[in-house]
Length: 106
Image (cartoon, rainbow, N blue to C red):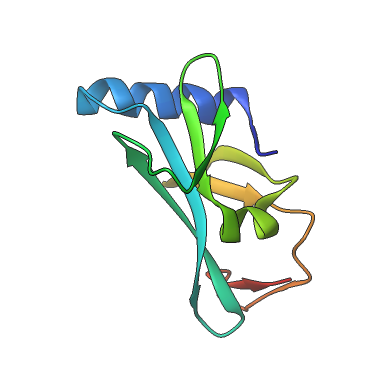
């Protein structure tokens, strides 16, 4: 199960409205970086039969089965630090992050 904070949820809904289409977000991991894995987040218009769907009242949270093993229990937040803002992934499964913060390992 992936949790989304109210701040992140508001931002997702706002972005979906600006796009004018979409059923939700797809959250996953990909192999990259010095620690091995990186998070992905994209807006989706439809789902594949192999996707796992977590229904939210306002939108769907979609993941592939392989990524879900790494993401279960994660919280997505949206934060602003000075001039920077973006989605932040708080994952209790993480063991380590690289120095630049772009990748992680479990």
